Image (cartoon, rainbow, N blue to C red):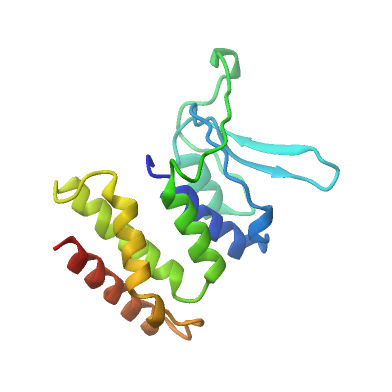
Length: 176
């Protein structure tokens, strides 16, 4: 996504799903969207998962893991790719990426509130109620406004759903 919030959420996912410390997770912008993930191994080599810019293949892999099943879609032809480029995202240019990393590192209810506020902000932008640049501002204000009520631990799904609802209400109230 243009805000890089998706990448921020993927940082949180990688931390929890693979047990990778936040300091070892790096985001790289790859405009061609051919490389979907990279993993640096202990010897310094890097493994890449490549495919067309379509999430069908990674989703099929996730659903069939650890097996690999045929996927009915066009296949990547590397001879047709002119170049693969990579850029480091600036946290000033992509504040949602910074907010997501901070929420992940804080843990507890912060990632829940982050996600809920982002969904409200994106919907408000699509509805023309806020400007694109206001998405990150709204998410940050929501997190700041809820700072004292964000639990350090989320004991169950009911608590998560209540926090999600509260964050959505807070974000909506901040839109005005």
